[in-house]
Image (cartoon, rainbow, N blue to C red; front, side, top):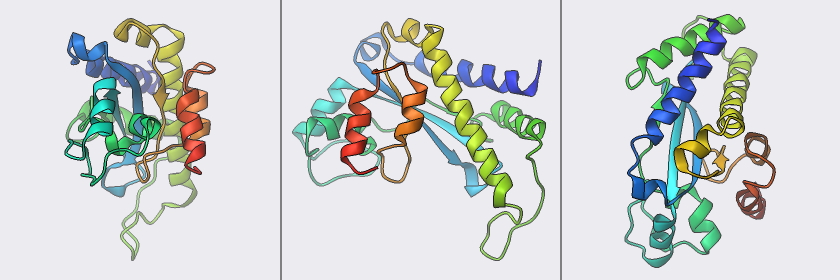
Length: 210
C-alpha cells in the first residue's frame, strides 16, 4: 500500500474513531464538524489535523450567558445566532481527535512523514536566526498546501461514501477554518462539502470579511 493510501486510511479511521466516542444524545445534537490544521511546534514538516464538533445545546449556551466553557473565555454572549453557531470561540472546548501529533498519534506522525517523503518534499536542516527551519521556503508552503488538500479530500470522501451520514445519522457540514480568527477559508470549505451544505457558514464568513 502506498504512503498516500496509508495516510488517507489513517485519517479516516481516526476521524471515525473520534465520532464513535460521542454519546448517542450528543450525536443527535451535532450540527457541524471542523477540521483545523496547525503545525506541531511550528514545524512545517509536522502538520496536525484537529477535529472539533459543536452542538445545538452549546449554541443556546453561547447565546444565553457569558459564563460558559469555551477555549478562550469571553465577557459577552454571542452577538447573534450565526455567531454562536459558526465562531469557534463559542464552540465546545476540546477536540474529538488530534491526528498526526507525535505524542498523541505517533502512528499518524510516522505516516505523515512517510507521505511527505513520498511527495519529495521532505527537507533537513537546523533553525535560522528567528527559530524557523532553515529550509522553510517553498517546500514548507508545498507541504502545507498538500496536507490541506488531503484534509479536503478526506471531508469529500466522508460525504460521498455516506460514511459521515452513517456515523451521525444525517449529513453535517465539515468546516475548514483558520485558528487565528475562527472564521475560515471559504474556498476550502466549499470544496469539502456537497453543494449547499455549508451555505450558512460560508455566508457568515463572508459577512465577517474573511
